[in-house]
Amino acid sequence: MATGSDGPALGCSWHTPETASGSTDLVEYGGISVGVSRDPEYTEESMQPLGWNVENARVASAGAWALKVGGGYDPAEQLDVTGVQVVRDGVVVVLTSGGVALQDVPQLASLTNKWALDAGVWVLELMD
Image (cartoon, rainbow, N blue to C red):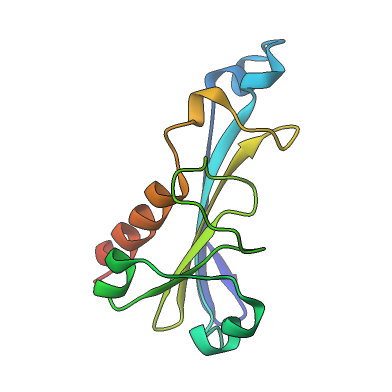
């Protein structure tokens, strides 16, 4: 837990067993990170000119909006280092994943962009 510019912020990360063990199988080095912070000025309208916003019915039904930094959202692609963000009422949930060399990590293949959007909504719902 930390204090961001607009209040409490939380960040967590999980690493593959190979990352923690010192294995020489570098292709398996990686992890996933989740961050939650508050930024009331971070709005859907402010992000629209960048073209990064993601249309997703599950996110919208939760009263939230989402974006994929850099654009090019593909729900089936493995979550990567730019991640996805799910935002509601100024609460920003960021999910990222990747390898030590910014590669896709085979063990993390099931962690897709769609999975991350759903996980972001779950985090927001836990906060209700």
